[in-house]
Image 1: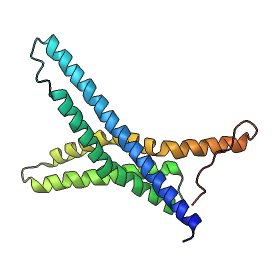
Image 2: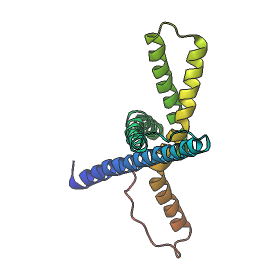
Image 3: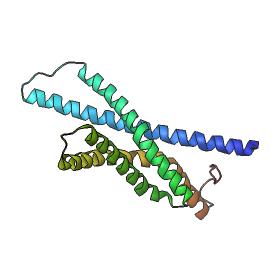
Image 4: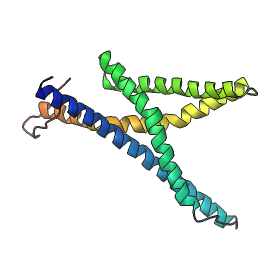
Amino acid sequence: MNKRQAVRSAGRVGCFFARHSLATAAIVLAFCVLWTIAYLALLLWAMIADGGIGSPVVYPIGLLLAVAGGTALAIMLFLPCTALAEWIAKRRELPVLFQIPISTGLLAMVCAGIIGTGAVADSHVTLQSIIVGYGVLFFALLFPLGLYWWTSKCGPLLLALFEHFRKTFPAHLPPVTILPPQ
């Protein structure tokens, strides 16, 4: 491997980690915002219902759980689904947007595995509870997967769009340097 190939490989690996770190941060931020909204709604409800507001450590503990849970979901579920979808699409020379149904299908298989493992562990489970559990898990993770995918792809997609417009209207836009195609 010569220096140029080494630099390209390092650039691709660095870009991959940067994109997925940004996507993980977006998931964690979304979970923290959702927890803050839920906490404020519950606090408002407690004041309206003339109930106790609870312990002052509930909000920070909830934020810590949102950070830990969002990070774990992003690294353990969304990163493998999107990275594998990206690899499959590149190997098959599919357009970038084909990664969306591929990563969704991979998430569906992971959810089936999680629910199947839970069903095997519990002997009192019914088919209806398996179907409901699968539906709730899959649809609850679908929006965060979309947020993760779009966040991880927004940089390269915007650069490609900018490059397309630069080639279409060369006199109006300055050149941009991106990694050469693989």
